Image (cartoon, rainbow, N blue to C red; front, side, top):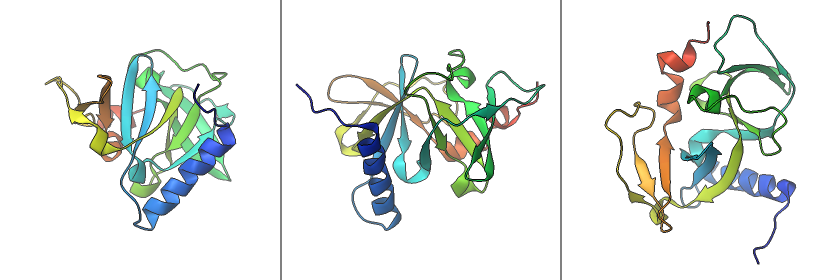
Length: 171
């Protein structure tokens, strides 16, 4: 039987890992998220903070993937529902595992991704290159496969944040 970890312990573990990486210590890690049936990997050092889902303020005349604005410690963040952006349908706001990834801080903007589920961390050394669709967007530069044969799509946050389709929220 696997050991269960409380959400608080998991969040503290991620905070500790981010702090370690910020100080240039430790091996690189990939943050794992799940959107529908697809699994995504984000470079932990680029992914920013993970926060529980606060109330969102809707914004009229925006794309369905734009979930709204979130107030995080007095700062407004533009929240994109990553599942809706991928065409997977909107993430229900009452989903227990839903979290916000504050992804734009290192690029100088207050952008956040609403993700339905965070799976944990992976070591890049445990992954091999896999078959990658030629028509994948540039913010999805690779597909990787783990030892269990599961496919993981790489997400390049810097490229995503400069993608015109992602940044154009007007309906």
